Amino acid sequence: MNDSRTRLDKINTRIRNNPVLSLLLAVSTLVIGLSTFTNATRNLLDLFSGAEQRPAISGLWQAQVSYDWPNAHYQERFDFAGSDRQLYGSATFTGSPNGILEGEIAGDILRFITKTPESLGSGPVQETIHRYQGKLIGDEIKFVMQTEGGYSPHVPVEFTAKRTGNPPLQPAAN
Image (tube, rainbow, N blue to C red; front, side, top):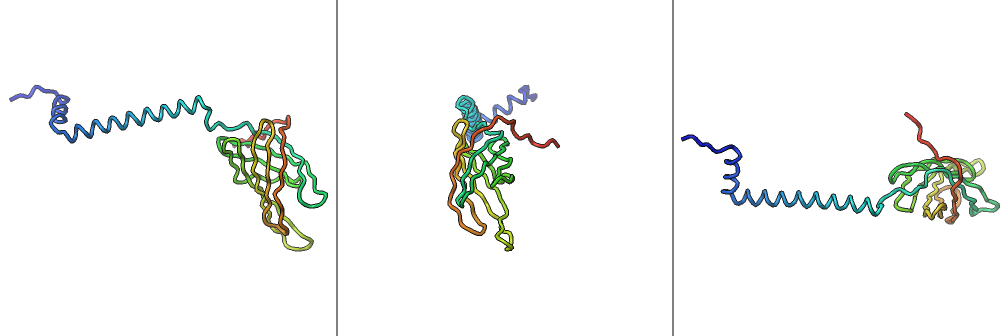
């Protein structure tokens, strides 16, 4: 008895004769098809809606900041760079540049911290943390900065940074 059926015919017969296997294959095909369709649809919607596009904040910004102690008015500079949700660069505090730490962007909101040393007379130096939160509105960023640590408590400081015409910070080449 020579079976003239091909290997594909034999597999097809086994699948037809096993209803559990047939159902499993049908459900698997349906799940894979729905998953592919759902991902493709989501990607198309993101493409047309511009979802998760990084706002154009890279470059130099300046702000006139009045801090909460007497005669404390400084022209502060912000140099922003990054990609996707990452934000890095520098921000001045009382005119001294500090690296941006824990920087992130979500929509038109940006958050980051800087750290500065604070000393009082001959006492030990204490670390001060400045937490910035800003909202991008056109070519302005409305900031609130809260200072923590140091020798004295501080109230939140509000100010507006404006874009300057200088080129953006470029990452160092490796």
